[in-house]
Image (cartoon, rainbow, N blue to C red; front, side, top):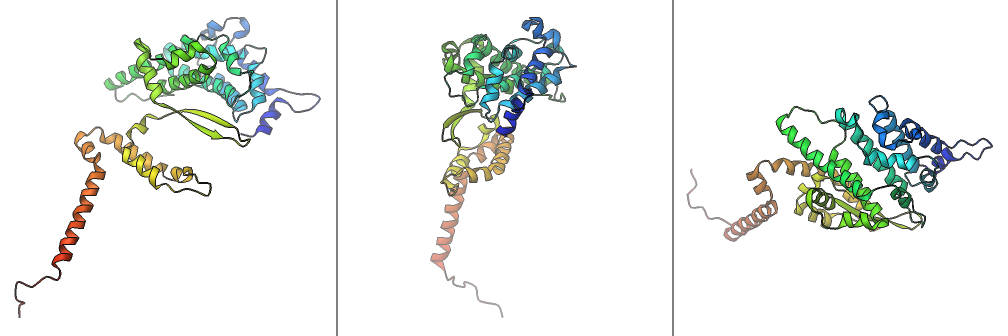
Length: 330
């Protein structure tokens, strides 16, 4: 992202200034029908004809903020329109009748809306937090329920696909959408005690399995930005990473070479393709229990073969040179 260009879109320092960030937000306000005062009636205004345009608007607003560009973040969060309320409503509300016929389009809307809210909060360390503005008109329990319902929707789709293997998978995965919303909950939880208790406490009932899955598939790292500030980055762990053997993890950790700064990251990224192919192969092996059992002890077999080869060489060296037991012909 180019921060100079992002700021230029908001302020050209001319006599006639055009704030494209505000204009884009007001366009979203109009197309979603919030100017009529009915945020709960989004389904009446969002249809197959304009859903692509709404998605493009959400993605554009996200690009305005990412990087991050704090000025554009504040412009969206503090705008006098119903911008934040619309974005929140897209996540929390059922968008019908579109949802009953084209659920993949609704999931894409929710996914883009959650990414936009995360972009508005990206790298915020000031006391006047945009997270508090987002939480102002949001029901924390409803947000968690939306993330969990997406998880259950994915399981229902998997059950349906078992009976129809030919059915093509379209759009974004419901579980992926739910995971993005869970990460949004995770980021907002530091500003809301109720949301923190819902996300971090042991769950019961229908939300137990989804929250357990999201917790075990969410990780965070710390990065140091150019201004020497430290920031935590929260990200989802892809399911395929479960299939990476412990031996491969240990091998990468021990054998990755350090660069001039003492970092192993460069060498690690150089091995990503091989690791990804290994994970895909291990996933296929899970369908064949015998081969999977054999492959899970590859290090053991390798050690046995190595020791066996050493033993043979020792025997050969001990009895060398060999005496001819049979006279040569001729």
